[in-house]
Length: 485
Figure 1 (cartoon, rainbow, N blue to C red):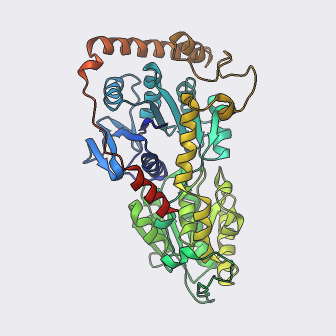
Figure 2: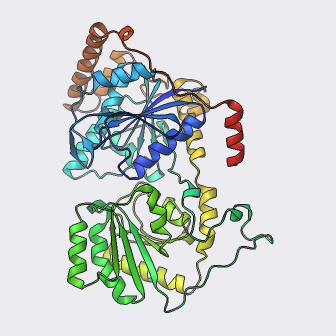
Figure 3: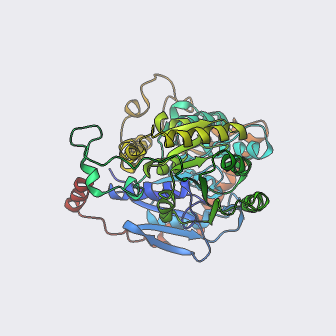
């Protein structure tokens, strides 16, 4: 069974990032599996209207007002007319939203349910419960997910966080991690013949890596947006101490953000310009070329649901030093990482331990790429996501998808499939809070009235159906999959 799917998020290329890469890679693999996939995002500088990417992936860049960090201004209803037009044009059957901070995502889920379309949400982030921003975000998330068909989280820690924030039944939340295209993140010395060898077997004739001597320079790479939540303040405090305790060490820092000025000021105060190279923003296709210049990847993030970049770093043969926060401990095995508390002193100690481990040649980083390639695959992510689509559309039984639990259901009706009836939807929203529940119900009613108005005054018969991108022949696709395996 194939589906017509719309990925909706404020965050997509050309902006670099983990969410953007996730949407692109997942969409590409779903297209390879025979599905039709489009992406709906806002207009970026120089990109407005409809664009096509590799493999026939169609992108709708909708012009909307941006307020902060590429997130659009939330209007609740103004996105509905153009969203409806796109959904009808492309004959969409499933709307898949991404990111808690995406206004497009939350509004698309609301409008899709009003139009009678199945919805899925993927959460990529962790949020707290005490500060004002988190309280507002969590209430918005509860609004969007009160009428969702299924939720996907990128780690088990992320699942626990999302279930608590949105008051969800844990059974309607699946964990599907991010992945990496291992072929795009090879170590510098990696050769195609290495794909044929089995680590530890007699046929393993790959030469051992050149040992790092006591006087050789060790390069530490940092690739991150320079924001507070990415631990930039922690990095600024730790760099002078790491360089002071480890003389034959240098840093390469790639990324941009508001904390870049603070980082540059620290370098000037400590006269470390010759020890720290700042590259600024780099495109995703350039990340590998930056990583292979180093030996250690430092990830000082304060909060992280998954951390795709550390998987990419390990795939490039870098030893990873990261903070023990969020879902990061779930991502890589212990022999690839050294963990630190999100504190300055502990980060300095952990980095020094990693440097000592590399100098003593106790860590075989040349094995990392093949191990990461076996652990993470976008093909596997696409297959598991496809199973979610099959579960919410009823193409596989509820017992097979959710497990058999007699008498249990999300809405108490005995049926795990969400009803599109307006009265049932209002019942789900009404329980969101004393005042919030009534406000949410009002929004749903207004959204329904707008939909009725659009159906009457702008009938579907007047909307042209878009032609789909030609699909690959079955025999060609089978040949490609065989070659990939």
